[in-house]
Length: 320
Image (tube, rainbow, N blue to C red; front, top):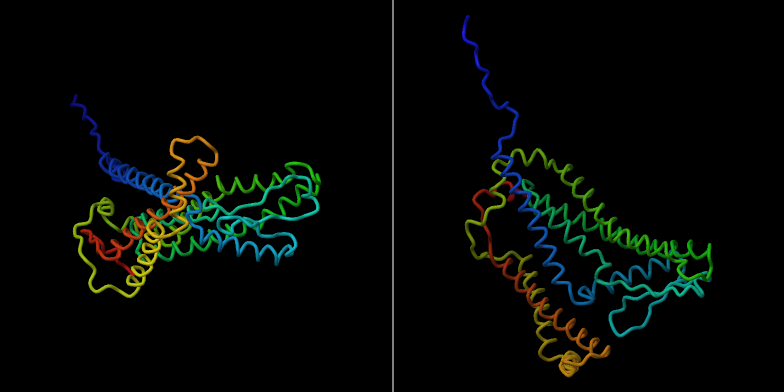
């Protein structure tokens, strides 16, 4: 009788090795970690109230005028306040007695958080050229801005529908707030995920990632950091804008009379537990926080504008 042949264990050609799995897991962890760091940085930068005051006023202005065109100018008005012009009040016979509060466009309502998040996702996607990433970011920003304005315009008819069924009843406008919270908590995240997936597939992302070679190179440190010379006109314009913002922030901290008044009042409230003092301290924290953050961001943008980062393998990233 012949000796039995022992079967040999061989890895099928299509299997993925443990080393490849570990490499992909490392990349996933790196991307998630960078997203978390970016999220924390965004929250720190936008910690002061009305961090995007100019954009908040612009969005409120657009909301006010479009609302007037659609539902009539008598159904909405600005609410006077000491801060930015970002508060609107709705009017309808069914709202009377329902204790409906005016609506404020805060820095959390403008959609810039969502735009920053999806922009970071697109920019971190490996294997895609810079030109396609820029187009994707601009497209997603346009979509999110449009959807956010549409979300604001839908609030009024939702409130009216709720209060027409129960005129003057407290909380009849609840459907408006439910929709508002849904969009902020879930809706925009779904739009981001669907939008990024659609963009990734439309630019041939899966195939590009297969063709790009060693994906680990996309997450390596730059091999060379040098000064940009000469500076393109677009970056010169960026530097001028950052200089204007930084100068304005420095002026606020050093020479602005109102800011100095708020600082003195906040210092006078140290150790005093009063609602008025808490408000004074918060006002100064907002003023100084916005100024210092503006100068920091201006310095970072200027630094990136003046320097050029080079990686060992950047053929795909440099495609235009």
